[in-house]
Length: 90
Image (tube, rainbow, N blue to C red; front, side, top):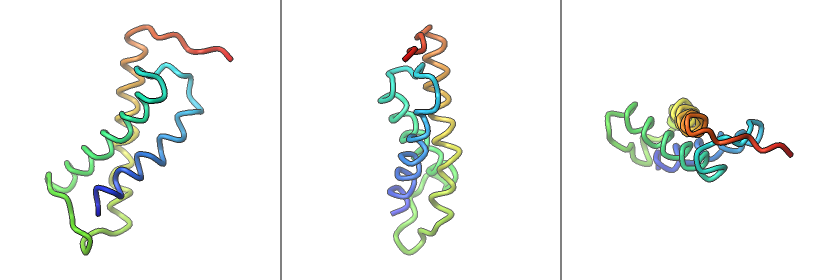
């Protein structure tokens, strides 16, 4: 159940990627994957590489994944900048 909370936190924070220039490696899909993988990995690291069950899941489980989602999107964005992906001018 905690994995579900981590993934949902990553998904929620991914929605804010529209406020940034689209220089993500892989576009908006790359930002999506970076947020989800970052949130899940950070949640696993914080919990000692174990996934808490339904009875051990609480609101703080979702908040623990927020830094991982942001770091995941930042890594994908930095890779896009490194590869020289131009920002789209709309």
